Length: 284
Image 1 (spheres, rainbow, N blue to C red):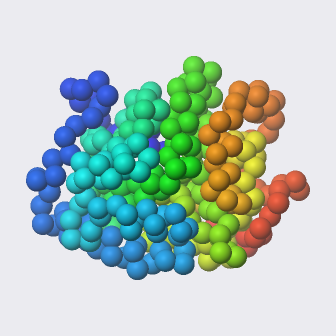
Image 2: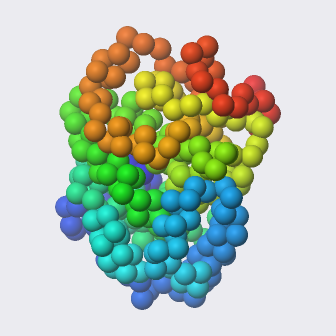
């Protein structure tokens, strides 16, 4: 997840909202080269795998292969399109800070980039995950509204002690969501879109389950943080997020208090299974 203190963080930045200057001029040629490698690899891969809204968002944003994007330029384009902006943070931030930013249409993005030796695995989200993975979908008005509503819902969930349940909604939509489109299944989640290996795995591999999205089911399902997902939940349309943006989660929290919690690869009799996974990637 995006929220939570960064590993090894010893103190908060000077600003109470944890924002820092991006420091664009301080990026080195080697750091821009890492961005270029990641950017070119993903932009070659994603056509036909990512949804149209992601590809269109990429096209409209001031992103290029040869340099890490400038957050001010991104924010100028985003603000005109959906009222969002990108703010720089030094790493993972506390939950309340994260939710407060989202609730006010500010997306906190790490201002650092992974090393050349970490192209395929990173413990903490960096500028490539945050900007390449998330920002294109913020150009879509439905996703823009949904993520703001998630931030507002997160502030309420904190008071109710229900962050774990709400976090699963974010994980299985914003980070690892799939949507039906063009007669197939396409990526809209940032965790997939920014991952070279999981992009193909999520929509083409026989291993994972692909299950029609159901909110109560998702809120009761654990997820993997150490490997590819065992199950992906698939929206019929991105417009389905409109309903989620305005839903009252509290009745769902109450139902989950007495209901079971499901394992990541578990398939239920009531599931609408679009693809029954072989599980070959996750042998028991």
